[in-house]
Image 1 (tube, rainbow, N blue to C red):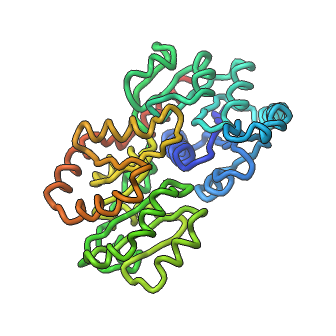
Image 2: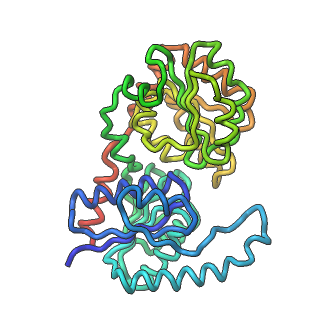
Image 3: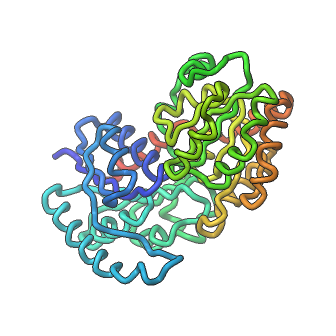
Length: 362
């Protein structure tokens, strides 16, 4: 009988893209494997997973709202409903294994699988494990992690250090700088800054760019600006009529963006950092300050300590970010040092390692 695998989780690109990378690696090793994704209705995965060529089922589930307790009233009901939906999915799909990649939709799926003695695997991309992953890790078959020191979250004997899976479109990309620049309609003669605030955008980065938008042209620089949906309109207005700036809410073909960017502004989520390492990019990192246990600052500081990145605090971005990135764009020697050091940390085959381990275990 063919293996039938459910991959559960999502919410952000940081969960979805590694999940898709693992799915593709499984299909590469064992093409007859059937794969079904399970996500949360209304979340990004419902759009991105079908675009990647996989089926997805959506659950009626929401996470805990930490800022407004009143919004949590319907949570227990949603959780019960999601477990009923999970039971239906399992009845019709009959999975041989379940993989959780984080995000609140992974919890009921893995919890149900564990109650039915189905093998479960967890991929934890961050240096600080999420709460639901910690709970699920106790009964998981194997826990794949990106870095060492994860014994404080998971049983030691279940941990396997693999690094974070980077999408093949990025890790295997052959796009040249010229092709990347042309893709965005910019000038190959000019230094290019790539600003990526994560799949949902980054307010502090966007506001810093908006405030200093004229400085890029003054310094002979051009900008590829991924604004995220919430800032899309403002971003496009700020960029209107400026031939040195490309602005849009989302970049679907990131391999062109990485190829075009000489220097990068980015959040410091685990997946963003994994991609920057593989792409060997000189980057200024602006950690999202409200990430659990402030893990984005931990991630960024880790690179700073290795002279593999520059950090600007979120609270200081408005006044410091533009000057920092412009200075880096003009300093060839500093760029080369950062590229060399961050490149040493890149892992290109994490998806294959994870896929083979899962298929050998089930």
